[in-house]
Length: 259
Ligand code: FES
Image (cartoon, rainbow, N blue to C red):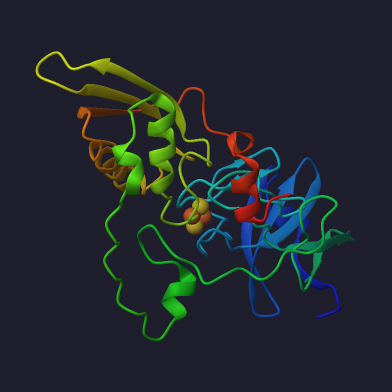
């Protein structure tokens, strides 16, 4: 589509405020902030969830499903678990009316080419609109057991535990929790009773509401417990300081296509 379409009167949307509109058959989130209108797809690129019902803070909208944030001016993904931008559309205001022209592609990160189309969504839980549209989703297969491989036979140390934890991957991002920067602290102490060591791990989540949390904790305990010199594992979830994308290693960024 290459024409601007009238979607609302300026007075229809509070400032700050947001409305769900339909433009040429597509659902678009229209925002009014600081006297300016913005329009982005009402689609979270993490898992296809709608955005317009999320919390709007300045120029950021938070996806109500798992908390990813997007810049309403550019569509850029600002926080995990989304890593791809959503489409931002052209907006024009004339004679008290708001017009939108759809863009075909989302802009890439600043200075980068347009992002490729989103991959088939994989959800933590619940049903996204994209999933709803699918005619017959394949039944989920049980996750394979997590193995720490030959590392479990090496001398126990903090660095070895971190290496072992690379076996634990975020079920949506498919990147291990060490390279994602989720492991804040690992400590060892001689077990109070019997042989072996008690291992304490402070880890965080990419968002406070991350539904993968219980699985990541269970996998972390299972992997570390596989070492013969470990008698117990305690995992504490720490949200302060909060996780930010700059905690990721370059390997994680490469895997996620973040430059
Ligand atoms: S669907 Fe938006 S953060 Fe998961």
